[in-house]
Length: 482
Picture 1 (cartoon, helix red, strand yellow):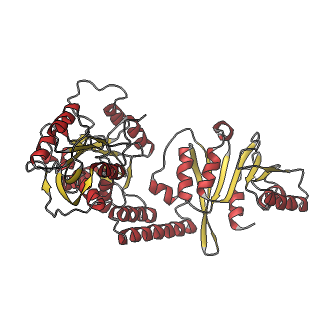
Picture 2: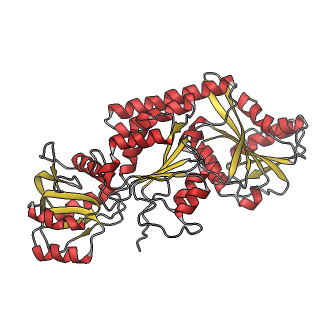
Picture 3: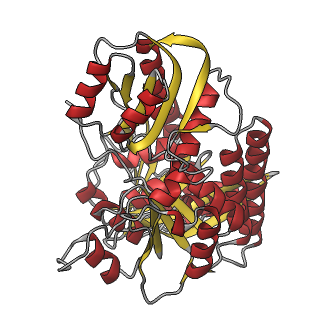
């Protein structure tokens, strides 16, 4: 056996039957029996050819009575009664994760998984935690000039998620020299991705992969929440928020430092649960978690959950919308990337001295329907609502993130052909139709604002590359469409 299979064998508990999925030549199965570590082994493969090779190995070792050969796609046809260990080695991480996902949870709750992915180990690690398995041990092994990982995982009812950087770093012993080398190589690989993204003009991607590289190589660091707040205040001053707004450090918990941050458009119960499962100490959101004065804090409300789980909250609403590089600045960037724009900086503001949006000029007019289809792609929305029977060609465009229907009269006054926004009320649509000179493109409140989260992660990772910063996987459109 090579060193990868030998390491897999070390992790086998020997408490019951071991199952070797994708057995190939059954070398591992034979060694488990011959060493006395297991009394019975199930050796499976998806193809007859490898099973025939396995049969020859078993017959050569005179262990046919102790090894059962099974033709099976993953665990599909394998009887798991009495199985204590399942070894899946030599496959891609995504394939291994897919095999585990198809098994009945009740059948594998008491099973130890020993996994040796050839590729994408970060995907496998993350999926294991999604399936409620904990990596109890991981070992890096060197085979020639290549380093592989062997993962040992068991079911854990205390549910948690891995962050992206944790999934890349793995769970090696701190003093394991091969584990250290594994992380160094992974860090170098991530840094190369960062450089390639930088060379292609993808600044946010480059910053993100550089930060991942730093965390994989050097680990995570704690930063005072006040330092994070003060840095955000430099970029998006909180005193510029509208008078009716409530942006700021809205929920303060006992911990004054954080290592993990989750970014989200809204602070909802699912987002709080995700942050808790990822060990986050702070959520930074766009919409304020406290907007109107609270007369009562109800059990299971977002504020109650934040405090009870000891997660702080910083919210940046209108101060983020109007800041350079804020929500509307990101929309401007997306439009510049997708259309030929003749406007030059400084771009004309839609607001009266307050950049709640901008106005741009396209180099040539575009049919309204074609323009709307492109906006759907840019914002990633399910649909775009558009005024009926209005201006057929779009050249001069105003936009305002979130709910900007109130900007219609100003956009008309400034001779715009279009207004891009979200959350448009019925009376605003009627006013646009009655005016007849402007087309509204409603791309949704969520979709015109959620895209700012990548920029937030970028500026934070530039300043604090060893902070673990995640964009919430549950920062999703609250609406379903049927």
